[in-house]
Length: 133
Image (cartoon, rainbow, N blue to C red; front, side, top):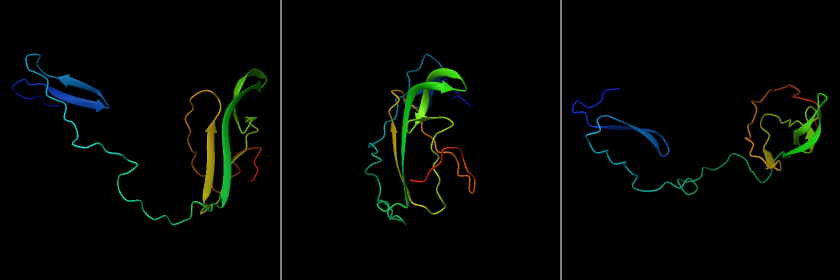
């Protein structure tokens, strides 16, 4: 990074409100530029037409995250559950390419928990306790 030859400070934004100012203390800090308008992602742009009807899914799933006391590999504890079942007896979600799927995902564990979708694995059985709903 090259700083200005006159020693004036440079503000480097790190994301959100965080930033670092580099340069001499003898200059005033440059003002933080503000956008002219606030972007509202819920009203920005025009929705594109869907190639399927989300109101008529091929498959529906319920995925309720929770915790309950139990034993896992002989160890007592309060373990994560999916639809009331502990690993390895959690229900697996099976879909086929082209299926329109509707999921209701909820977290009743009392803790924040990130949700992530594993990559599709065609023609593979992903675990025990599978059932079609």
